[in-house]
Length: 354
Image (tube, rainbow, N blue to C red; front, side, top):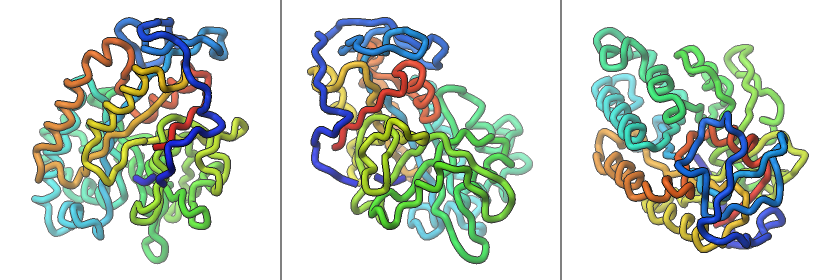
């Protein structure tokens, strides 16, 4: 989970201002999408372009996703959760993670759990016997990936490790596959900055695993950033990064899109940042017929230690029921966001830096 800060400036793909009036509604294209709204509307509904099947592009909306990461053992919050000698810590976190996912799904939100290798290894060790009673006989990730389709999904996340016992993103995807979670093409975290250290351009081609012949074909990047998150790219929207030195520039000929998380993960105020983005939409400060995105992050390894994380997610969803009803806000998983971008917005890029 990563992103680099830039001033809020207009890039080439995000500079035309909207002109539609608030409340002006337009019918959605892409009826086969998993997303729907109460009235098909949205505050800004210009129709200057069309989808590949000739329908009008969807109105400008904010697409929001709750995301958690678990990390390797050198991450302090996860140190005990992924310790092979501390099963009770893992089991407490397992229970809390299920409760977090159910709370979001029941409230009408959407949640992506992005997992690194060490947590997967804990599942392989401890998801056995009576433990599986709470998840219908399924391991944790298979259960979460299946119990609420369109509302909860499991993606890979990897702090890749070289040397003996090393692994890369493809190895993590394979480990999820063995748990019954087929790869969905989402790469949940990578280095984008500085350009000399980037590791995302190789994902434009299938990535071979270190430990096997398994191959990962990436379809969507999420969470590009920098070491220790000191210079992360924070932007809303979907686009195809042009190059390591022009990450926040769209390349229409590009084949690997990126979804922007927008919210500053170093600040525990995602509810405020979501409201700010919605305020820009309602005051017609965003491009018309474009898809804006935001990720609301929580630390998975703290879910069993801090009950306020689940309550905060629930209260954030409840605070925006009117925005959902008005068609201004859509709760969506990361892989479903890619589908909507292609079918309802004809892959029209937009980049809104923070």
